[in-house]
Length: 71
Image (cartoon, rainbow, N blue to C red):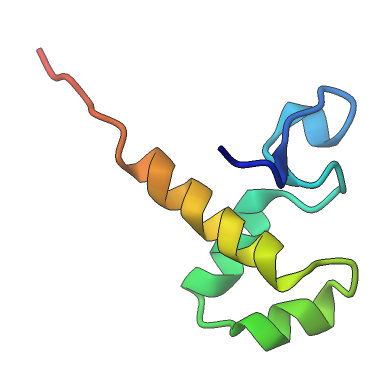
């Protein structure tokens, strides 16, 4: 479902990263949340592709759909 999001215990402690690189999804989503545009992020991370950023946002949206059951 999220082929660009990888989890490897040897990379960033197993955090969700982009394509096995040391770029956590949380960093990308955090930059967008603080107003960074796609071109700005791509400029800061030349190994990223536009699709990586989109999938990071899609993954974050998917996680936010999690249901929390309170007692």
